[in-house]
Length: 397
Image 1 (cartoon, rainbow, N blue to C red):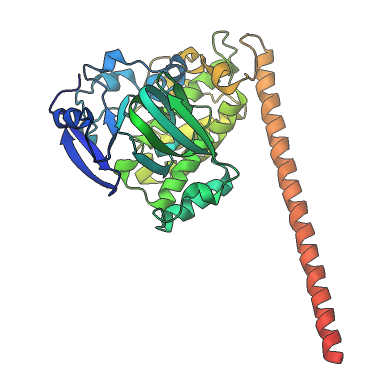
Image 2: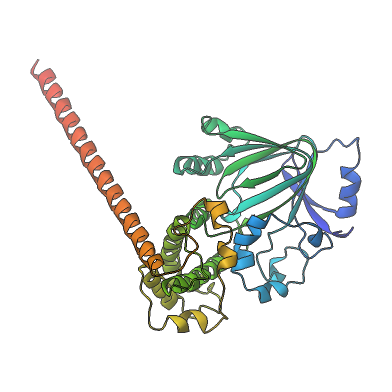
């Protein structure tokens, strides 16, 4: 269904060296019961092949995936190349992968590109996952481990043993890996998996955090989420249109969840940084001809204000966008919504009230940190004074 001559990127798990193999040769190797090599295929993206219509991702993923709900469908429709050649890529082509591993293969600890979430369906075989949450401390350890060149000597889970969990998947299981989770995968038996990566609006701050990790680790562009920055602009544009409708009390639009609001505030701050850089601002799509002006309007919307020229900024270059598709899975993914699916003037007030509460929380956090820092400084001063007194006493003796 993907063609006998389709060239696969294959990893030799023993040597950790990559090479290429035609699909016909891979099938012969995979089906050979006497095979001794440990070969692994984890990057076969098969969208637009004959296999594409036979595999459908979970509905909840399709409801929130920004590639489906923020990226212009007309651009996606222009994609003709079945491979992932960036030269001919028209959209982030990461939605459908086939992973084929033989028993004994191991993929070391990593974070999926761009902090993207993953859906993962095991058609046959078994997979054992080692999973570590992306806390600031764990991400810092991961960076040091990645930079230190000790991957062959140090099992990363040993650096945070209290937080590493496992999940054994068997045929028929579907699995979700959230934003930024550090994970490794062992294959006990020959397996075949279908899965895909997706960015969404329920953990934008987490996705941006992983972007910074990739920047500090200097991850090559070929190993990054394609069109990441441009997709962030498209996602922000989609959210801005939705905010306008909320502030106008459109009864057909779901309110933003607290996770979306927090992420959108972080995204607005990141876009502001990008907008003053010619290199990054060039990633803004045609629907945002003036990146700096758009960011300013986005901040105004987050503060509950409707700029007079907001329709010109958001709607002049694109048709009206309905937010129901993006928000349809809000309760399933986020667990709660800022307000119920209702209309009326109360929705706007509740949006402002949420923002006020969030600001107060941040202020209290800053005050607690300042108080803790002050207490620590006083403690250090006292310790220094005691140390000086002891030294003086010793000198006198």
